[in-house]
Length: 217
Image (cartoon, helix red, strand yellow):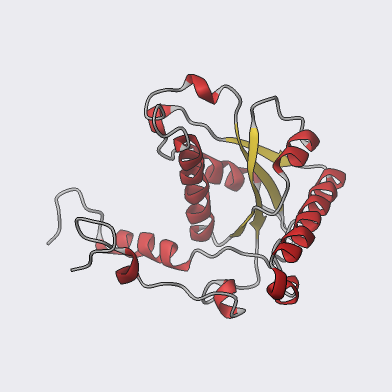
């Protein structure tokens, strides 16, 4: 049944294809992202839903090669710390490619702004909804990038205060994601961590409950 406000079948197929084929990319081939295209992607991010219309996303475009290298070093430091915390999976983790900071065409940092406590609408009991709103913006960016044929990777291996200091964030602001964006030789046919046998995805049936936690049809 086609609902009156539904997109055409071709439009729906394209939307679901972008969702299905989106990948957290780690392998990039340099190149560039045209300014007009980057602006289009960021506009898609900016159109994300946000609780109380607070729009708690700030994007920093990293243009300096020296600054990019400093961010790479922060990621490498956390990669080593994560490996040690993983114990017996340390060596397995160290074989994974976990970031493309040096290789991607564009590097962005997504951050939450200062002063978020002033936004009460929708956050009085769930203050973390500012983070949820930023995540929606990042997802918009990710899907738009896939539709445009660009890869994107979300890197979370960094110490937030160190990155905040490096980028001169004001007190109260917090970096959430280092986003690698650019051309890729191919998209992974399945999530890279599945390909590398690090983890296996779970089926929706396992995660969908009815009426109460843990109850299934």
